[in-house]
Length: 200
Image (cartoon, rainbow, N blue to C red; front, side):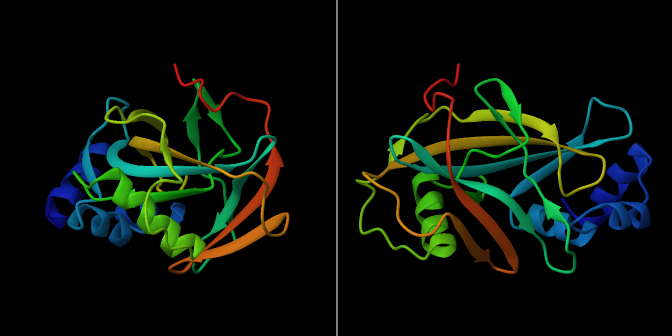
């Protein structure tokens, strides 16, 4: 999809590029970059006045028997807004994400390679193998549809492959701050009262 095609979608939805940039955490240029890198597809949404964004990702849960390291919020460059990512988990839309990290995938990319890249880039850990990881939904991505937390009037349909890394005991401080490119990620070790395996 080229810029003009994206602009045509915006015009059909009645969204001006100026208003979109003003009300979004990320810009029209950022969204178009995702499309060019084949990280997302844009199409018309069933909801009038909105655009649909289809994307792919791998998510990782790092946990012990009683706690997990979960993302609290993220801060994007050029803003001090604390953005809480949304996620459909066990049939419930969470306002508090239950993952440790989420890595964007290119369409058709191997989910395991995606999550290994995320572990390396976001957590600074290079795994020599995938033996520590368990894929919770191999070959069957969960589809999570929600209003985008970073793009104005965009419905995101995210196809997600989940991985788990179970540790005997947690490492590091209660609050962990990491950087992914220019995005500042804030994570916290916290107890959980849901079943990580209850996805149906």
